[in-house]
Length: 177
Image (cartoon, rainbow, N blue to C red; front, side):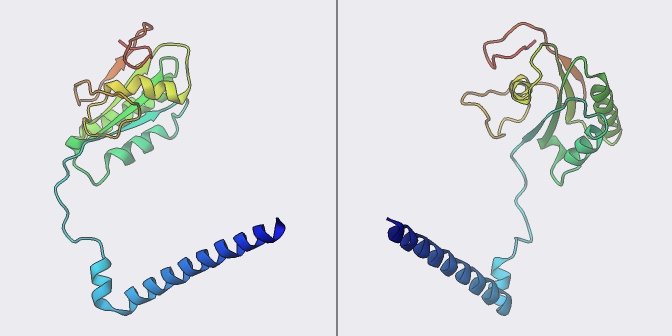
């Protein structure tokens, strides 16, 4: 039994060594030949972006870092009309809500309006719950789906603070308004 296990380990090691040697060969070949290097480069011109994205930011007592995080996301090299960020906070987390809203106001002064704060009011404070609260409220229609059934709810892309009530909706099984 131990001989068979040793043989299997040697075989896997040889395969991994061969893969590593091949990768090194490709890297050296590419660096050595200008035509191969040019063919492997990133494109000089890109297609116009058409996919919209929503960054869901579940935050709890993040007042020291939420503004920086939000500003970095919203200053991504991507069209602002296709980029959205939602900071998801519990209603009792005033520090994070105020810091995020101040950052949103600064972004708004720069003409960047795709960020907002979503405030919910219930007893569940975990990140999956916060994501479930925000997911049906995103504007991006082409963003990756985190649940088997998702839909987009058209909302304003301007900066605003929204609140959820404690009633349960059938859509995300979270507290929704």
